[in-house]
Length: 301
Image (tube, rainbow, N blue to C red; front, side, top):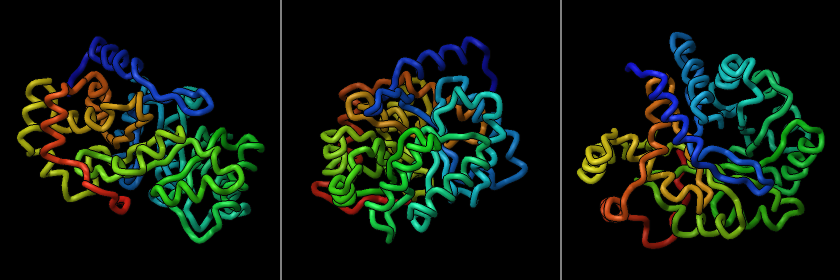
């Protein structure tokens, strides 16, 4: 795919128009960069690093990773990619639940920092809830904040009851983000979790917004309403899915983190920030892929 500086500048302007404010006032872009499975294939390493750097240039400076991704390979890839531009990046990583004790959390964080080539994370998440009491995990997160190793913390794959439990422990209300699965074909969070998070000012970080890793992706991309919206907006169906996931980004505090291992895909993601679906388009998509009528278990990939 070819593009010129005007195309890059236009995409950059659209991305930078839209942001979500965290409780402490920090602003993050409504579209960031996910890195699940990145760093696994040595033959793709150069392309993946170029993609990450282009994303930062375009304003998608939030990069999300985890110690689980390739058992550290993703973090190492990112560390090399952002060398020299670390100050331009909002860096997010996640800890395994079996590393959620105070001692193990500190050790896991240090390993992630070393692989990422930085002295701090902008956001550190508990990847999913495990056996460690939330009170101890929160203490560990707060100690990492006091040490300057992380600037803020959050959770991932927490359902409403998990968030309520978190809110009941000392310091639990300092949680800034909950990273959950959310896309047009998986709307369960809209029934209960999303309203709860909106009320308690916890931002949503939507992983797999393009239905990556799920069986619905092909169905979504071939849906007539998705395809029609793509034609009307001179966009791709994937861009329509991404635009849908951030349609209420500013009001609901939703940030999407699609993965793009090639520069041309990064540019397409950035351009999706400018797509504003009409009320009719949203209504048609809602009819085709409606949210559940009642609370359902949290989807996880």
